[in-house]
Amino acid sequence: MTAILFTLCLATPIQAASWAPIQSISLSEISLGEFPVTMAVTLRNAIKSSDGTRAAMPIRDNQGERVVVNGIAGPTFDRIVPNSIRMSVDGLRLIYVGQRGQTQYLWDEGKETELQGPLIGLAMTPNGKVLYTVLRSMPDRRARIFKDGTPVADADDVTGIQTSGETFAFFAKQTCELFVTREAGKEGPFDRIEHWAAGTSQNSYAFVGTYRGISEIVRPTVRLPIAADSMILALEVNATGDTVVHMSAVQNATTTDIVAYVNGKEVQRVSSDSGPGSLPVAFSKDGTRAAWAIVDLEHKQSLLNIDGKVSKVPDQVENIFLAPSADRVAMLLSKFDGTDALRWITLDNTAGPKIPMVRPESIKFSPDGTHFSYVAEYGDQSKRAVVDQMLRPGYSTVSTPTYGSTGDVVAYIVAAKNVWQLVTNVRKSVVQADDVYGETLQFSGTRELHFIGRRGKKLIRFAAQIGE
Image (cartoon, rainbow, N blue to C red; front, side):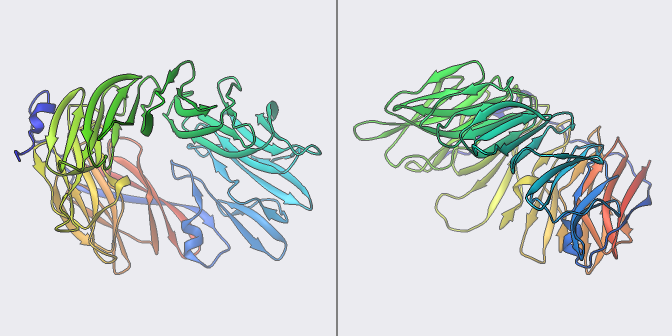
């Protein structure tokens, strides 16, 4: 078996990228208030704004249940409806639903509004400007969908809510109709709905709908028919919703064909006696590039397709990652023969260290595509950041690395023996906290970042200025 030639997929050679010089790290802090709880895990589960200026969490005391925001308790309810707290990314809008007796109320930045029935579900756009609620209409007990308090659609019942970016979908339970935010549009009816996928912009969705034995890929303004002898295996949509990649299995007399389609047009076909393994699909952040792999178990190879160029990989491709800019690709790989349980990540032409586990959400490129990082896990007591395929020192806790706006500064949170540190390119700074929530680490510019930690019962917003 020949080695994979990733250069087939690269437009130009990638030069080694440099890091910005860092002379100092200056930490400052602002208290977000004291929370009347004793369990640290409760504070860890508090809902926090992305800018680190606001945190909210429900508590129970002798009076009932309340939501505490930056240490200040809100009104008392018999209960806070589970999973009803929502906060916009900028922290400027906080909503939740509380219940007194049999009546539920929507709390929206200090304003209480009585709901016209029990809450089934709710969703808010990331910027906090639009709120959808689904209520059980009384007395007919139908589901009613509201947009900012105004009813926009009715359904017999709603079995689930799908959200992604600016797109929300509500599935009617009995008729299998799909209500979406496209002017409260309605798709269906369907006997079955499968493979829901959505991008980050409004109405960037696609799914497979089946009615009376006929299946179609349904998009906001397009329906793509699916052949009767074809079974959909995977479906993904890019961020803007204008490109849909789906994989189908077509059964022949003795073999199964795995067929890849882009916007309904066949672009690749692979025959196999044993059927496919994994079928990972990836898009670049701007949605202009697409990549996928068809894992051929019979011939023990993965057929990698990047921007229409096909190459063979002698290993299983479990996942694919495309750089937001520059023609770079990373893949999570494992052996076909199962001789070891280790995985590794290949970046362009370079294979990284073999590792037991990798945290999938930690795999990312810098904004300019010149740097790449992830978190390798070697067990409960050993986690290591891998930056540009180089292993960093091990700790008991390592957060997902994040990058400044220009991509030449990387930062992440580590902990060992209850000592928390902020790590940047080459420098570290001790954080005086009992707990640090690495998932809140975020840059607000090239060299400014913030994160939230806990000291005792207090939540604290830490701000770091990275000096040149």
